[in-house]
Length: 256
Ligand code: ATP
Image (cartoon, rainbow, N blue to C red; front, side, top):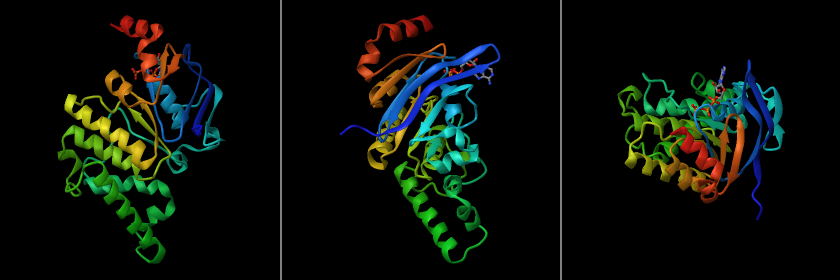
């Protein structure tokens, strides 16, 4: 069967003063697939992410998410619309526990989620119970069982990254944006991360857009890879094709 396009980026242009950060970039991502986005520093990868989370307003072009233009959505509606995200620098509430941090991710589901903490009656109480059930599932899914009440600040970096992933998954995103998830992880931790990324795709059915400098990770988990350089898409294809692509090889050799 032909895969469903979940994300359709068309001719995206972003300028910062005189810098053309994105120069007519276009590609599609498919539901339930992993798309790797690679390129040297300054290629424009983070700018693509920022356009997707509406932190950046494109000067031209369109982004269709599940067939609808993203430009119609306010920034705080992005997560509710089904786009989850993690950051290059883990952004958690350090003084809160693991479960509480993860529960925060469920609150993008709507006002009922927020109310649940103050009104513990009827429907709202049930919704809060649902959130806790989902948190329990995500805690187990990310291998965080037993750490519910541990203060995030006291946990090692790779574990904090897993808490951030669990939080991003709370809202059942259709598309998950991962910004350099392998940064700061050792070889063994990257191997665990590979399995977790594949599990998010295979068991939760989530599409993933993966920005990553760790080539071994990108090439081993991605279903498709888009390579960028100087704000342009320079190649797109299967990981094996991209790894052999002369332009991509030149770009990375040029990078040193
Ligand atoms: P990295 O791998 O280092 O994160 P990247 O591929 O994510 O790089 P971007 O951060 O998207 O690249 O940057 C693309 C270009 O836009 C760069 O030339 C960068 O300096 C410029 N740029 C990004 N954000 C801004 C901004 N807020 N103001 C001015 N220039 C910016």
